[in-house]
Image (cartoon, rainbow, N blue to C red; front, side, top):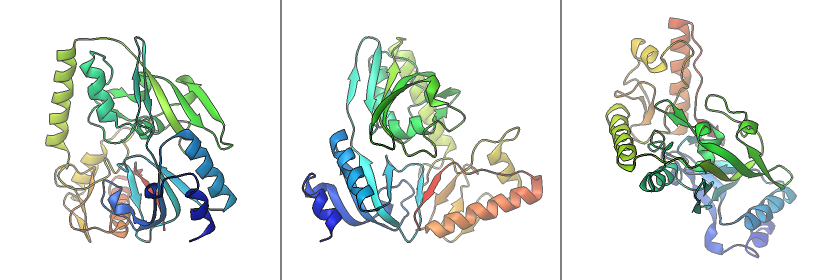
Length: 299
């Protein structure tokens, strides 16, 4: 076994280090070639140790949450995929602190069960707290920035830092963490109380809306394209006659044209080609440049 693996097993449990792991098992798209290493990390000490070993060995790495906004290419990922198992939630009278690996849906239901408001429009968003903060996740007029107090993260020098809401530089589906080599460890949210029954009713109504409007019955990575500036992206794709259009096993959803779905054992190449084709058609027909929302990694 190689030097990097032998170093890891000195510190980590062997079951937390998987070699040649299919990434289709770890993305909501159910697509992706194999990663050289897939590593579960259970605390900050382990994370710093692993990052140090990766850098010493010149091994590339990528941090994942639930893989709900991710497409991994068919030839896989050369290097290590790290999944943060930071799943602790701490409630106090005036704040909630949640680890980066906590599901946003789980946190939402726990908060609402305590009568805490602010999460009710966000509960149906798939993915983790880390991913939600990184991309300023939002739905039904609410965004993560509306309830966030601060975030603790690991910088590129493996130093732990904390930044306030303002320092996140939140924009639409982006933050300071987009494009930077920072790793979110945990985020803290404000506590404001409302009526528990009303909050739960809002959450359940939103969940029903999602179920009726989005193709949740087929593997996907959420909205494929970003919201338009002055136009509705899905409406343009529909008007271009692309609903139901397929390349290989990838399809523009019949239910919601803003989603590309894995309708029949799609490859990442099918998805990428379908996105490219859609962008070209919309540019030709409406002179509009579409931007993708999901992240693509691998080779």
